[in-house]
Amino acid sequence: MTETAPLLDVDRVRELFDLRGAYMAHNGGGFSPDPYPLWAALREQAPVHEGTLHALTEGAEDWTFQGLPERDRPHFTAFTYAACNDVYKDSELFASSANAVDPTASAGVESSMLSMGGAQHRRYRALVQPRFTPKAAEWWIRKSIQETVDALVAHIRPLKRAELNVDFCAAIPVLTITGVFGIPVEQALDVRAAMANPMDVITIVAPLVAARREEPGDDLISVLVQAEVADEDGVVHRLTDPEIYSFCILLLAAGSGTTWKQMGITLTALLQRPEVLAAVREDRSLLRPAIEEALRWQPTDPMFSRFVTRDVDFHGVHVPKGAVMHIALGAANRDPARWERPDEFDIHRPVKPILSFGGGPHICLGMHVARAEMVTGIGALLDNLPNLRLDPDAEPPRYVGFYERGATAIPVLFG
Amino acid sequence: MPEAAPAEAPVRIDRDLCIGAGQCIAYAPQTFVHDDETTAVLREPPHDAEADVAAAVEACPMGALTLRSSVPTE
View 1 (tube, chains in turn orange, red):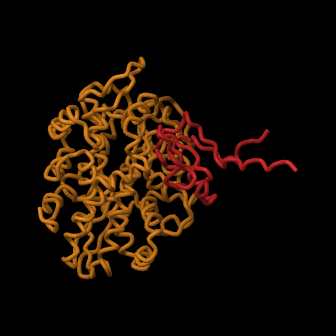
View 2 (cartoon, rainbow over the protein chains, first blue to last red):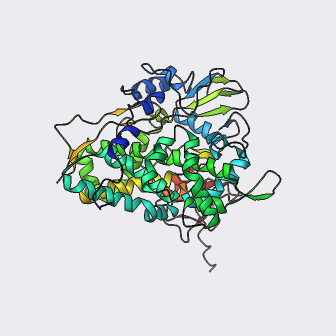
View 3 (tube, rainbow over the protein chains, first blue to last red):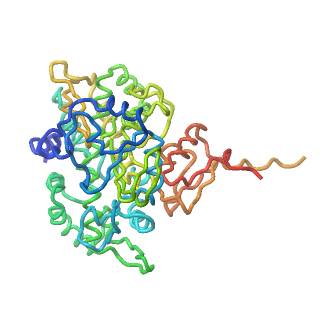
């Protein structure tokens, strides 16, 4: 591969990372109105409403997210910051799975730590947490992020124009996560395509798992094959292949599917405000606050869900055991009880925690990696593309999507 | 003249609750660091703006941090 060839097949990237395409249709990828005024009205009416977020949102359709809603359960949605935060903070009352998780069952997200609770979740998360700390983000940058970003920037720099959402943002996370897994670049898009069918992911990672068991290296699969976990009785064992596959499916899905959209959202917010972009270019210490503000103002995943484990009166609503509580964290992030002018994108706000990475014991494992990808990626654009601006003759980017939100194409000129 | 008491740590960390998620380090990197068990410990001496330390305490997903000023004194 020459230094300036695209790292990935551009047409295939466009197909896999088109929010409005068939791949995203089930979660409302084509939704184009701004849902925030509707969510604000709901948040003002009551902290918690009966119904799913899409059922409560005018113009939304019967979409699904992470396998929900299950038809036979009552559904509720929390809208205020206080209510959403309370859901995250009480992981016993609001559990991540309706049933106990058997990690030795067949591999998949439902067998992974995403679905576990309590001490079991803590034991499994602890195996990988050391590779996902703020300090470890430097390892990710060295191992994968910097090289990916440099190659992408080298490719677009001579062109004087680019489409940043797919040709830049989408490529970074998928190459970052596959890079630290030790999956070759040629297979990176196969991983993304395989997310629709976990068995295909296993086909890709199984030979790598076998090879790392023989000879460990400096990558995530080697961390997993060497990890030891104690079971309920305190007996320590190495992770089985299905346990490792479940980890891989979860980490590859989470790593390739979120940060690209959030980076596109952040870039769009900056490009649409040239004076803010200029300020960030001038003073790079503003990049991190800009990324955090975009996370607050327009999180790519504005909703997550929990299972209610006992009857409870919660923020004025009686919620029965067995119900599902949906966390409208996008609405919570704009709660006027917590932020002044909450609908404004303002990178100079006082620092205040947000719910965009969730909360409680399941808080996003990859959040420091996501932040590192965005800082490295956007920083490289500012360093290398002088006079970066939206192409005035192209269709301007818009935010679309419902349960997975992001920007449409981001056409830019520079130089 | 009595010696000055050593400056009190600004935050109490519950090591049993800490899962090493690293939110405290993201918000107040000059105050918190992970030890080799990926558990939060205080830097010596801690030096972030008070507002950043307060944000770190609030951002802890496990509620493992308590601002010293909010710990009742006996």
